[in-house]
Image 1 (cartoon, rainbow, N blue to C red):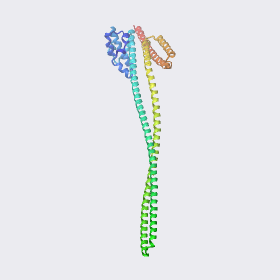
Image 2 (image 1 turned 60 degrees about the vertical axis):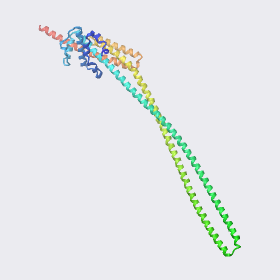
Image 3 (image 1 turned 135 degrees about the vertical axis):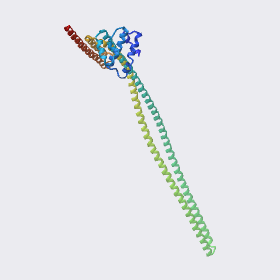
Image 4 (image 1 turned 180 degrees about the vertical axis):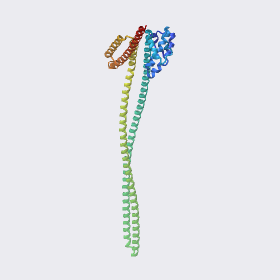
Length: 400
């Protein structure tokens, strides 16, 4: 608390050994200021307590109604303090000191809140950046896996096509060999039969007709058996050829299905690759927006000390001007305050912070106008009280 009240003791002429009274008086002030500011009645009450500490430290008596003052009797205590200039001056300084203390503590509290918010936003943005970076790395890794899988599928498709062509050539060669072997064996058998028939014809001239008939029957039976054997062998060979043809057709169909599946997988991989590229572009755009937002947050954080410094200067200026404006006959002081505010506004307008000069004009002129209005109200009340006292004095004088 002590760093926030560097000017109280010098302004109130309180020695070091009597500062515990002021610390006790403002013990609950700073928490109220940090949460929701201070109300006018609370400010008057704290001003009375600080003024009593100053009276006690200086050995000056003060109205007894101000002892253990409550909110109900606070207005009466204030009216009693108006009756003496010393009391009213001390109370005015105490009242202004309460506002200055509350204002400076609010600045510190707001600064800590802004810094904490900035730290939270920075941490959130940093975590978001790390998540996006990990997602981008995972996306690059998935894209590499897709490319490797695509290359493997293409290589597999080439190998399947080559194996299918080689198998088809092998079966065609095998069929050619089987056909040539069958025709060659049949030709050899027919030549052998012709040779036997010729030999039999030559021998038939030397035998009798009965022997010729027996031989003819035997040859006929042998020819029939040979024909049946040849027919049976040719039927079996036809079945084998049909089975081989069916197997070849199934192999060709399987190869075609494999090729179609490879093409379908290639289309799917191409679509996935295009989708991954779009996602990568989106992530790049998000990272760019993140960098822009981080730059804006950095610029705002750089402006925070500048704003706090100017607000402190403005608070000290109001701390100096406020008590002067609260004194009676303050019309010249009001004029001087207005002239000073105009000069400050002109200096700010021509300074390096010209983009923010309008805001500073509002920050300076609005407190001056509010203080001037409050001072005018106090002057009006003081004038009414003085008129009442004059009437009472006239009535008493007439009565005497």
